[in-house]
Length: 188
Image 1 (cartoon, rainbow, N blue to C red):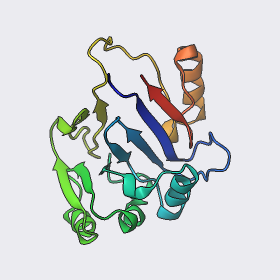
Image 2 (tube, one colour):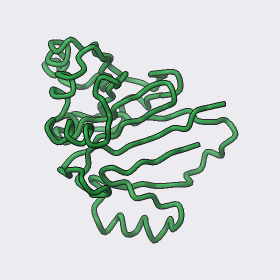
Image 3 (cartoon, rainbow, N blue to C red):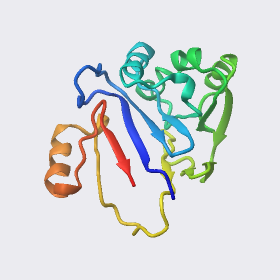
Image 4 (cartoon, helix red, strand yellow):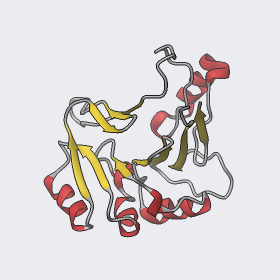
């Protein structure tokens, strides 16, 4: 029997759970049953670490860090996380600057670069680099083979903007999920 997939939004400028700090940026902890993957690291370390503490998530429990793209609101907390968990693999698009990769390696982390789609962990895949000017990667979680490939739920946040979030909420109705800081989404 497969474990439920759990996504916890740990850094976001969109509020959801009281007691957590909001700031411009994004990070989410993905628990796949076996692995804990931090997807992005928000805009700065103190807020990220504070939210992790308040959510009772130990940075030492993070198995891997995946960075979507080079913007500081997605990578700004990385140094502080690596101060807490240096022996981790950090997966980033191959287009990230060499100086950024060297800085991560100086912390003691292992850097893994991605150009094309491939498996990262047992049931976690990367799309590889996407886009033209700013290269980024997205994650795909293999959950079940019995599921249709259509989109059933949406959880817009961070860069989406209030008017667009309102359109998603109206269009998706029961398929709309609040995705702000502290939101926990479970996929069975």
